[in-house]
Image (cartoon, rainbow, N blue to C red; front, side, top):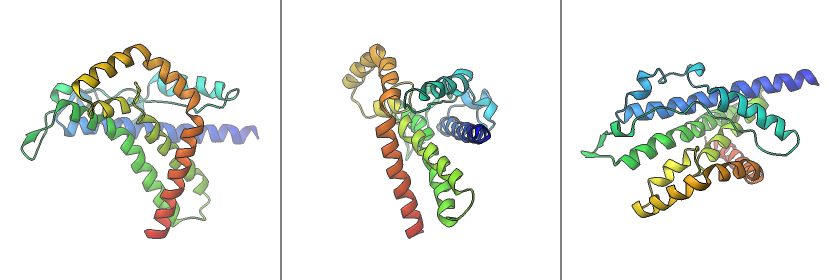
Length: 220
């Protein structure tokens, strides 16, 4: 029993580190595509997990959350080392017109969660072709993990990516008041989110997971 728990913990850890590595790499790749070389110069344009692991957010924080989750039913959250980029260098033109800085920053932000959704989709495709595979249970866990990362990171509360995505759609006045609000309450909201989001988040993940597999099985 203990061996199974340890083995499961190792598998989840490997899946999480891989998913976070792809997530952070995608941020840096998008920033590079939009003209910023900061991440590349700092050696972050790579799929080497060691370049993206943050000692606190990737190691210590999940362990703390795991200990708490044994008493209180909360999701175990982890994150990679924030992707470095300079918004001033995000100057790629599309159809002859430069992107606004807010739009460019939001594209860098959303690229991380989208990469997790792509991982979930590709894995679901594999599962849909091999429904009786012995590894299907592990692959289902990987799908749920990446859907969770996709949804959770789009919540518009820092340090999550959703904050920068939302700012791209707000007016200057709304942005001003939203930033003031976040400066006062962001960490309080983040902590509350971790403790309160487990039920709704799991429900949303299960729905997307089920429908994604259904679509792939029946239409592809």
